[in-house]
Image (cartoon, rainbow, N blue to C red):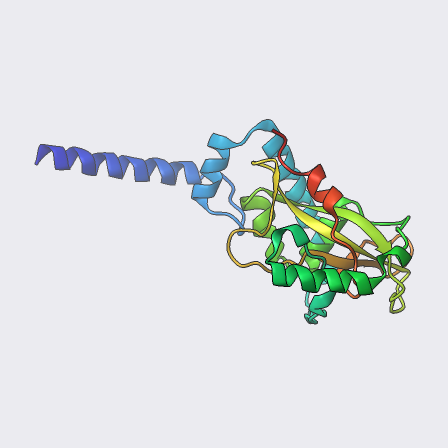
Length: 223
């Protein structure tokens, strides 16, 4: 009986301490109190710098210009998306190699003007209507962008490029195929600027591009 009372007292004290701490810890609507406490216990200086950078970038992306804008998702032809032929079944590999042969990648022109990693990440946050936010903050994942190619399908924009992207796990210092939970990201996107100097935006890929093996080698874990 005495042991049960002691355990109950410990639980009550723990809850009381958590409630007390919660009054001094700011938790955004993207986070939980438990996650915030975990941050204070496990985060390194680099993790905090990445966290503050991402938080500022997210705040800048939720400007009044984006409020009330309805984004319509348009399915892009699946044949456009680059595939790592070393990591697929033989029948899929044969189909992909045939597709690559028809694509005439040698005619692609590497883009001189292109989004950097932060530009691409910000564009994808907007195009996914913020669904990428939790992945960036809670799963310690950043978007990395690879080689970009000139895309003639400008659709009235100042310019348009097509690039592969990669999900980089800051904690594991390695790339990963998809975030935990729903996989809502593609392997490549069109990035465009509506006017000269405007922020980069993202949309579904519209031309076939090769798989960017160099991008994956650059951000794989080093032994």
